[in-house]
Image (cartoon, rainbow, N blue to C red; front, side, top):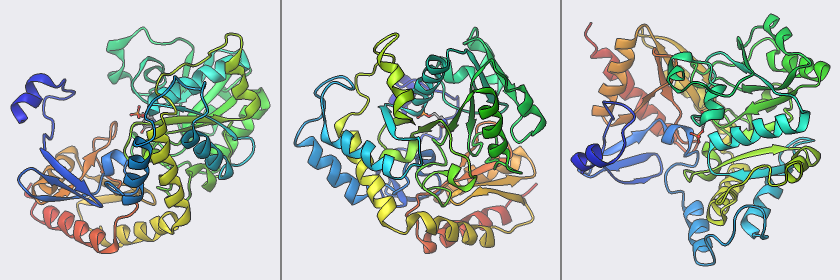
Length: 393
Ligand SMILES: Cc1ncc(COP(=O)(O)O)c(C=O)c1O
């Protein structure tokens, strides 16, 4: 299988991890040789309920016996999507009431940027240095990391970058700004939390100059940080909320939510302001609905903070310089890139899945399923400590 994988499936790095997958269940992924791998990555924050959660599988199965795709987005009334957006709205503060369902995080960002330009009639987008919002042309344009985008220029014009958490830089948001786009917690940059009321100050500045605030919750969203959405920690409600990853427990999905009035502007001038064939797909909506119900009817979300404490208590080692992040969105900061690479690859050999972050080469990602047990956390931390103790400089 590996030869065919390398020959026929497009690759994005010269050295893919290339584990051959047999199946996955709960906190474990099994390879074709029968080895179990404890998953501290959860499909890069996408499998919040672990692998193949029975309630999600049942919802998908039930929906596939009824219908799987009947029309492009927005024309027909399909119960899974309607039930989902209604339930989602019940957990969101005013004015976040109307949701557009799409196929991926990056498409949700594209939709949010289009909506902001359309609604304000302005063009400038302010984004953050080291931000990651996806990889299509629009979201690439707001990525704050030149080395990964210069080869694809020209990108969309009128994007200005400010430093995340820099109170002074907020002044660069002006009457020309259509929207400020921020990750509530910066992911690729190294799991950087907003500090000193930063998001509140950005919100205030946006209100002063009539700019919209878009928060990208694609990674921290759906319970990972101890609240359903991370913005709830920071007393700051965005005008447009962008969702993805953990929303459908591992199926491809994205969404953006705004006020009814704002979202209505996608219906005229021009009409069909955003079009998608598969957005709102009933099977994926059924999976999203089962996921949201399970997250909000269980103790999984508050438990993430208890699980974070266990990680922080266990992961003490001279080679770990810092544990960053919140809830089950954690990063180990190592002294140098060699140790980071060693740890990820050595743990892979020992049956523990870890991963890198996009723009912080010293960071090791820990974003396990929210369903991970305390015993599994102990087991994985022990493997990390054993690997670090075996490190030879
Ligand atoms: C914060 C953030 N925004 C957007 C995206 C893009 O989402 P997708 O890969 O589903 O397009 C990601 C994916 O890693 C992300 O972490």
